[in-house]
Length: 446
Ligand code: PLP
Image (cartoon, rainbow, N blue to C red; front, top):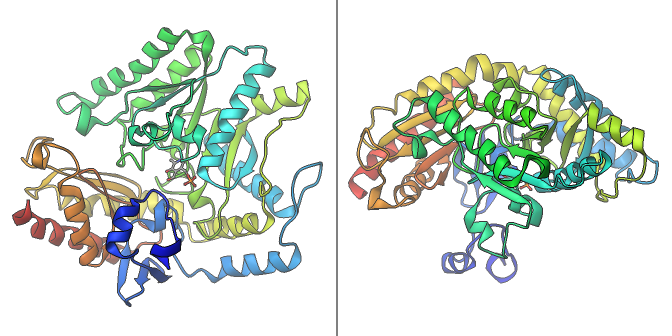
């Protein structure tokens, strides 16, 4: 049936047919997933960077069940509302205020892509209202991932996505990413951060500051390969945005809801974005829901000027999804999972990964909170790749990890990890030892 009828996302359909279909994941509990053959694995990816509270939480099932019986759906268009999304907006505002009390309001969508599409429209709407309609350009980074819709894929910097369908759409400029291992190997972190941040200012000047609407970036690039910028990078980006009056947008779809040991990733870097997007960990993936966090100064202008923001989705603020997201946040709070990531599991994960630094195949290990990557190189002490091109070694090591009982992803030659925030210290040790065995087994094959 999978081959006959199902077209999965981001997939090579020739490979799907050659394999005779996908590997089915049929159940899960805690940090472990079980496939259709009954094989249980540690989930090193939290589903798809999202199951922050782990699997099997009855509280979320009950929240969905209760809400479906009470009111499964009603829209939030035309001056109506339902209680769950309003409560959720207030709860999210409380978390956003920790880093930036100006982030007061929330606009709901269903996916990360839609949240970034909303940014595209809301930011341009804001500049129109402000009487600066020329400000249409978004500056983003190469190798960023902001989603798969036309606008969000354009905001993203994945060339393989742009090549299909003539993207990006006009009005998006891509500058350098802060990927020091790949693109600033011999520089100090500070010099590298300054050089890369300066590419933003150079581009602003090249296109004319009066034409630039916003800069968008993930605090830590996830799908790009867990790119953790030097600590000086984001404050420099923020200063450049402020200098030219450009809105700063953080895509918190992966970093939000505790991943970096803070409610939002920008809080770790100490910056104050004007807008943020969030999804994934917002409901731990139990139901689809996303949001855009909006600053008071943007809301104030829309209130002052009046007129309809002609944008929204049938399921914006879906009451059942919102009820589940609230139950998810309650668990993050009651189990202290954000603080635990910062002070216990994040540091433990970093230390455990360090054990792999000496492995002959490992060029770098890096992590922040509970997201991390291991770079595989052909010559220790360099950033050279096997076969001279990226993407040879990564899939081999990934497959060996999966065989060894750990679900991880290979992004080019990085093994990336993003386990549930509920992972125990013993499970972190298990994760690292499976990767170590996979690296040992890969060595003779490379
Ligand atoms: N933004 C980031 C940083 C992401 O990682 C993703 C998905 O992985 C998205 C946006 C798109 O989210 P969705 O797949 O829910 O549309």
